Image (tube, rainbow over all chains, first blue to last red):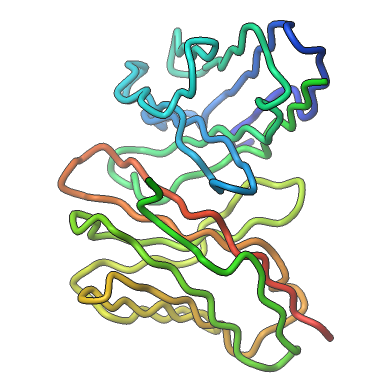
Length: 114
Length: 114
């Protein structure tokens, strides 16, 4: 199993540009989570999906952030327009509901907005 | 409002000694707790967990203690090894919610000196 795959690994963009982060969960996992890591707040849950349906997006900081999961093998997190304060490492994780208390994380996308 | 708090951003110990990482939580609905370990440029990986029906769980050099009345848990690493140097995240879940949602703390960076 290739694990949770995130792309790109690094993204540098200018303020105001649209950024799209991608995630491929582990096959068979029916829950997908997007987290953001910052020094102040640690791993902050942005949104999660169960069976491709968004369940809780209360962690999405602003309307500039949106996430989709069109099928069981792909999810995107989009920021439009991006701002310097969005600079962080964004992680995607997946799990099965039966073992929902042990996530498998991807390697993350380090986003820098200049 | 940070429901899971790790108040020590960093900890430095000598190889062979005990490392104690602490975590506090505020939500009394949390009944399952986990520790994750994160190396640079990698995603967090599951380390050890504990259910609220227990007050201790041990796995090799790693032991997690839970004090429900104090809403406090700790991770003990004995003996500490240089390879243990990483960021450690505490996480909590309310299993009754049946969502698998994990709330993480800010993380503690552990440095084990040879």
